[in-house]
Image 1 (cartoon, rainbow, N blue to C red):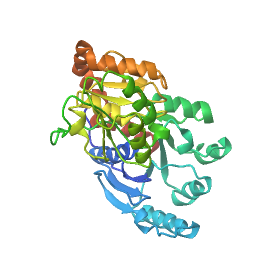
Image 2: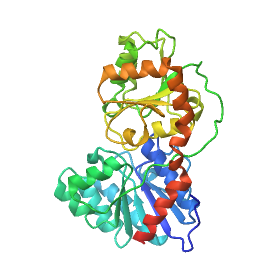
Image 3: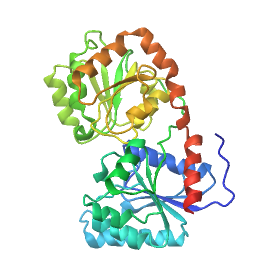
Image 4: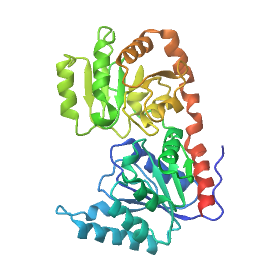
Length: 366
């Protein structure tokens, strides 16, 4: 698809919780790039003072105004600051990517901060409690009359419709940016890797490590690289030690440019309990690296064609995961086939292609 710039550009503000160390945050940054490509006037607001990704547009860091002794009064002052910013810049449309799980806060945003402005709310995880209040009547009160809701996977769209009865839910996948490798990985080949926030409650690193310990990969001297930062770093290190894998599992901190590792990895693994539309998978495939993933809700089954660009196994099934990792490591014909087909399998997720879907929705809303 070819992206033509719009004839009547809109003032569009992308509101995010942060731009720090996460796939959802990376996707939000890419959204600003797509809107800029389309010719819109782009504005970005972060509610937390955490920025790791490059973005486009006029920028307001509301998080920088957050005091150490934060309370409701200071939070309301920041909401008023954002309201004034939106009006001063005559914003036509807000695309809200924040975590939205505090009812009182989101009443303030919906009914006060965003009042009389068109609104699109993005849901980037199958765990709906991240984006909606737990009580269904509260979710319906807040979002029944939203101009649009966007789910980043078919699974999320169906889940939102079935849970809340909403019909104004649209599917727009996360895009992948085509970037060349900036430098070579410092990890000796061959190696496998996983990447993401170090949060075992989401990413299930315990399953990955237990499975890796039972594969033939340690004996074949194929190490595992865990790339990321987060609250469970110490727990993961202790798990590695308990499995006596200190010489075979490496941990490196979050890297906003993981391509140098992704491109040279033998394959990438994902063992999450739940996802949205996982960037780890699409970014690996985009540089020609096969994947071995669990079939969690949601995303992997919409990306991976089993035996074509990777292997997909039932979630929480350690034995199946062990078998798949061994197969991808040792079956050279399978690995070559998946490697050759990896890039084309995500070609439809280019920035240019996904921008077209955003433009269609913006025209419908505005």
